[in-house]
Length: 117
Image (tube, rainbow, N blue to C red):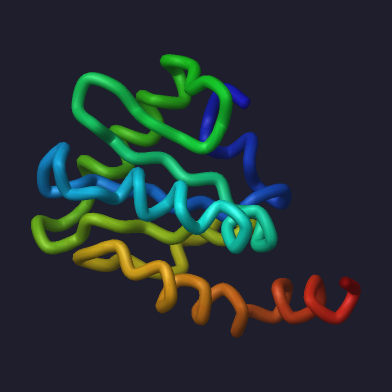
């Protein structure tokens, strides 16, 4: 995957712009691995010089896409949830995984996925 659009119809995305490198978002996301995998989520955290993800590697072209999207956010927006359809589903000031999971679980596509499982 070399750009964000490559994930469309395959994964939901969480993009995070932490307030600082010690904010703990990466650890929070890693601790929720099972719930994240269950919802087909790929996450990216912009750490400034690098982009950290639950993907094995983040190519420079993909890191540029992530940074460009996050840099376009308002000053009080630090977290984006992007649906499988490629649309932005929420813009938040902080990473609240329970709220994100609730929002995803209420989506029609996710409800169909849960019924199929």
